[in-house]
Image 1: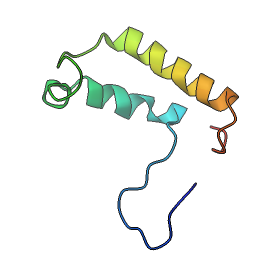
Image 2: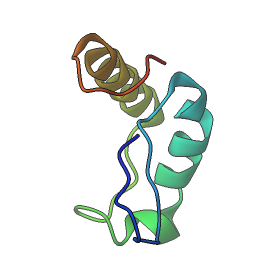
Image 3: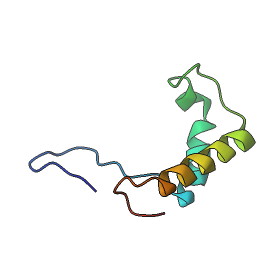
Length: 68
């Protein structure tokens, strides 16, 4: 995972399949989603499917990230 020497802060990693439950919980919270996009809570079933597709696409695309 790339990191810049001498820099401190939040370090992000690629999303993983095991993140789905936490991701859906976060995006299902109206207090969180009021700051994101149109401020609406997405349909959990469709949202989970989209999340899985984005993870699959990221895994099949060489980005230097470790496979999930």
